[in-house]
Image (tube, rainbow, N blue to C red):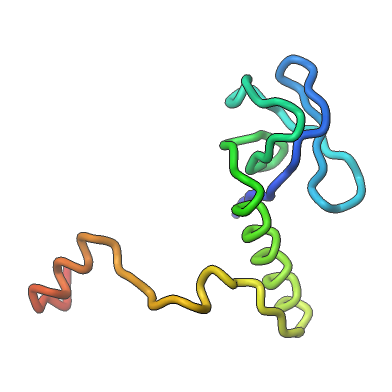
Length: 106
């Protein structure tokens, strides 16, 4: 499974960029899918390739969630899902329609 990580772009040279993923070591990022990316932009990086631009708020949420997963894997507690803890879960529209119609199977 591939997990996307937020990267803030530091430098751009054509479709090649250098970014900061929070690890302290600059990372190479392929911008082939996002050629208009500029230094300072945040991207969601999958295996060294930027897949979509994100804003700083979404980058922070993703980083917190990834830190929570890493903490859980170490057996530690971490509240890294702030965007989920203070809301009632919702179903996608097609499943909500089925639930409202009383169906329990697809």
